[in-house]
Image 1 (spheres, rainbow, N blue to C red):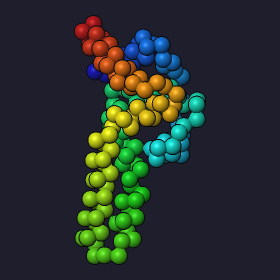
Image 2: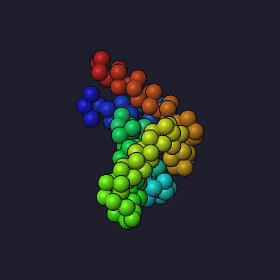
Image 3: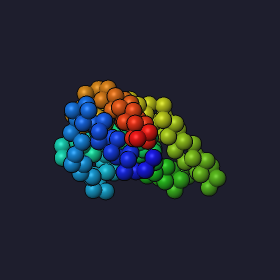
Length: 142
């Protein structure tokens, strides 16, 4: 499905649940990094948080945030751990892998927590994603 149709399906689904679908103001890189570190965004980004947590690429976006958050500690381990290079690399890899695995286990809860912090009710994410998928199928058939 094209990006335009995917976005259209999301907008229709959001409107069907009486959620404000726009304007989606994207955070600047500093705000986005703060958001990746589990910080809240200002209220003007509320619609963007909803889109980020429920669009068709929400899983990829989640892992991009996790990789951004894990990059600094993993790099610090790889650089500053007083051990041979191979051991530092292995330790950094294991630490990064554990961070990704842990967050993959709790992906739905973590995403719901972001939505609740942005002012949406618990359960909005799965409901909107289900509606979006339904409308996306209708658009493909149409």
